[in-house]
Image (cartoon, rainbow, N blue to C red; front, top):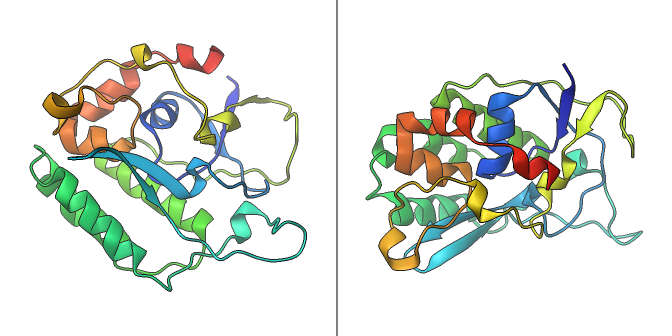
Length: 212
């Protein structure tokens, strides 16, 4: 059975988490950091519609600021952790399962970890535990442009790549009557709205979008 190569991202998209739920994955740990990707952002639904939560990072100088993803440092000069949690609370406090998972998730926003890569893995591990999905810590040992023995799903970290919305069965969202169904948001949207039904949703989701 082939392994699937994927990036750890900030509270990953539903598409990414469906792969985690269904496949044997390995984390890409040796690529360069790229801006405007899910590495340091995710999308949720607020009363205003689709909303981006963006993690500030410390930028380096030199060669176009190029650095390894796993070396990227979080910028805690602004209290973004508190802001992100407050935004999630406001957006999802009326959802059916926010209070159920609140005690599991809130500690993520109360500790200032130094590295983006490790912080993202921690968010994935906590959500995996909430879902009852096995979490793997397996990582690549070097970077390969065309990896052997892997199905390369690193494109899923590209926030500009649109995955066909029709691939995602609709579920009830807090602001669905106002904005219609918003597909492939952060896994948090599915978790807070569907709770114990989130894992079966991920395990039954068609992965046809991987070949689109």
